[in-house]
Image (cartoon, rainbow, N blue to C red; front, side, top):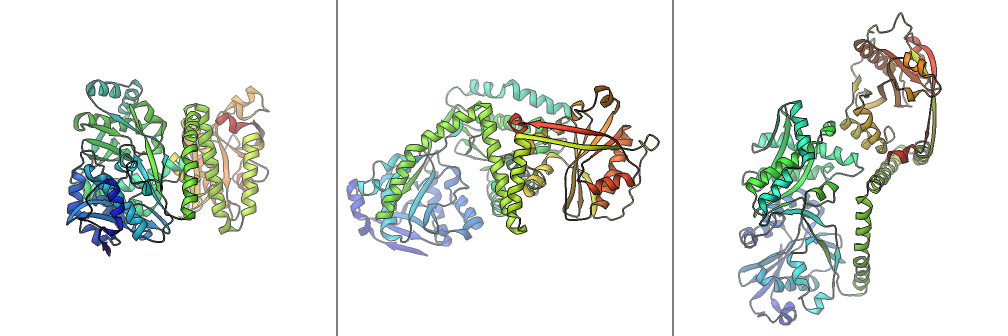
Amino acid sequence: MSISYDSLGVVSALDCLGRDTQAWRCQVITDLQSLMELQAQWATLWQSDPRAEIFQTPEWHRIWWNSFGKKYKLCAIAIFAGEELKGILPLARSGAILQFAAVPQGDYADIICEDCSAAEVIALALQTLLDEVHGWHECSFVHLSKHSRLIRHSQHLPYSLRSRLQRVSDEPQYTIIFRNQREALFRALLGKQHTKRLQKKLEKTGQLRFRHLHAQSEIEQNVSDFLLHHVRRHAALGRQSVCADPEFGQFLRLLAQELVPVGRMRFGVLELDGRALAWDLGFEVNGKFLLYQHTFDLDFWHYTPGEVLLWHELQYARDHVSREFDFGRGDETYKDRFCNYSRETYSLFFEPSGIRGSIRLWARSVQAFTQPVLSKLKKLAKSRRFGLRAFRSLRVKLTESANCVREAPQKRSLLGCGLRLTKGFVGKSILSKRWSDVYALPAEQNRMPKTVASDDPSLQVCVARLGELVDLAWAHPQILSLNDLPECRSRLKNGDRPYIARQGAKVAIGCWLSRIATESFENLSLDRVKACSGVMMDEFWSARDCNLSPHYERLISVLVNEAAIQNVELLVQCRSDQRQLRDELERQGFRRRFQAVGHGIFSRLRQI
């Protein structure tokens, strides 16, 4: 549906610009089909700008509406001079808030029009919002670069419109501008010794290959892997990934189907012996490559495959991209090492007339004043290693607490959740002490394989990798804390292995199998600890609402067999409250060897 009206409602705005108003008319378009009838003229407008972004194309908006449109109502403003389309302001409405369509999925936003007529098109569009669109409380134009038409021409609007606008600074976006020193720039970017060492490290382990995918069957398979590992990567940092939304996955698939064949979208994958390690999605239009989304397999984090992937994309840009390599939205610290330009971005807020609009305008002016200060403080804190790690630790802890509170009402255990979080903070961050009995098999039974007695196929014991631990911490914070992931990564690097016992999809037991370390037994003499050469099982979680005996039976049998294969002794730590574990150990012939005691003071601060 579209609402048309002549220029009478906007004559005053154009008169202030000194323009002829007789031929102008506007439409408020409220359905996608009517908007797509303008696709050909829209594409012509977009192509008239040699620096236009992919996010303003009609294809992008059509795919976005097909994926996310159920949550919004279309409210696009189309401006015509006679029958010629002069500009489109593509807006979506959510409740009483108007915003750019395709946000937040787009990195840059702007009005679509020719630059020579931008001032009058913007004036017409804003005046139309005031006169013809009712019931909205605020219109927010976000993700505007300082070169966008809305930012450059807003200061030239009539006072009646300009006074309703407030500009607020956003996070800068990092990019590489090639300019005239292209060869020297790429020699410096591709010659970084740290990245070259990572590349050689990977090449020593197998055949390394980077390529852009073109076959839709391969793209479909890799999109699924990309979504999984993007969720894991962000969960490890205590953030909700946009890829956790099923609609975003559909959005990426539709983009790939339409934009990859015409060369506007690049889907890069880094493979080691045929196994994908890292992925990226980028857009290449108007001589610019924009790195839209990227991630890597956490199980290969020690190889830093994300940086190797970036090195290959920069190599591609050297050979095929003429103007710019944009890292897209986000303030990740690695971008500072590569970029040579930070592009300022803004949000522009347009308020309606009336008292409530004036109050919000005043509030936005306060935000405009404080935002640069807060951004500088944040950047200063993150520029220091301690500040960056403290910031991440706090974010992870808040995310973990939110996850616990979200699950608590379902289990009616909000009080228990609070007590558990408090205990975890005091126990792990300030003062901790743990003691346990250590069990081992008698010498005549040691290092002899055991037969797993249980035939229940739903009982499974498997070795977990880092990605699976991240999934566990994100979905079940009561089992594994997000804040414990750095320690898990360190233990994996040292050769420790986590084992998970499940019944179907339900986790029953989690434990670590590690080489015995001297510092694990502070009450034992050095000679006695050295005499206990072997591996130790240390449980970090077990379910309290089920019979664990079958799980312990299978788990201990698996670990005894692992120890026999390695020709080492298996020791098992058992706390006083682990009665089912103690019973199973004694049933399988284990005997108490000694007691281990561990202390920790401000251990969480040491991790930061």
